[in-house]
Image (cartoon, rainbow, N blue to C red; front, side, top):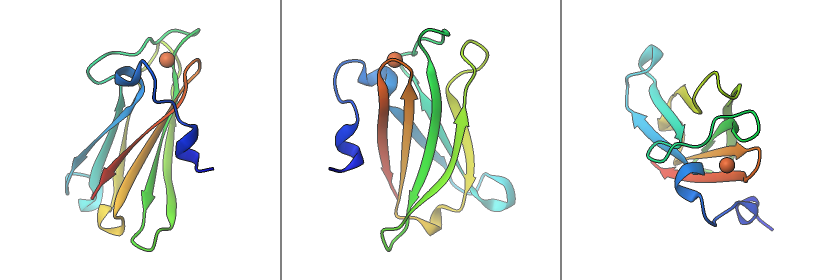
Amino acid sequence: MRMGELYKTAEGKEKHVPIIDLLKGEGKAGKDIVKVVVGKDVPHPNLTEHHIVWIELFGVKTDGNVIDIGRSVFGPGYTEPSACFHVSCADFKALVATSYCNIHGVWESTHEL
Ligand SMILES: [Fe+2]
């Protein structure tokens, strides 16, 4: 079984799936900024009892190896589920973002480069 098969695909997709935006060359040392946001168009609840716990970003290299680029962990009510990573995207053929809701589980999106 692949990890992706475990992810949720049912209702609530629009407020759980992480959205990946890429700003080429605008990061530190000329790297690209990869911004990952959950609830971009439809806000996700941000309460202790229901919130986005973390966002994680992976890079898929041309040889298929998957690199864990980083993770942001959120305190409910104090910050929005949004993270920026400064990455050299030329090293990757795709970016994969995952997010975790404490009630609705893990969600995923892929941005092909
Ligand atoms: Fe949720």
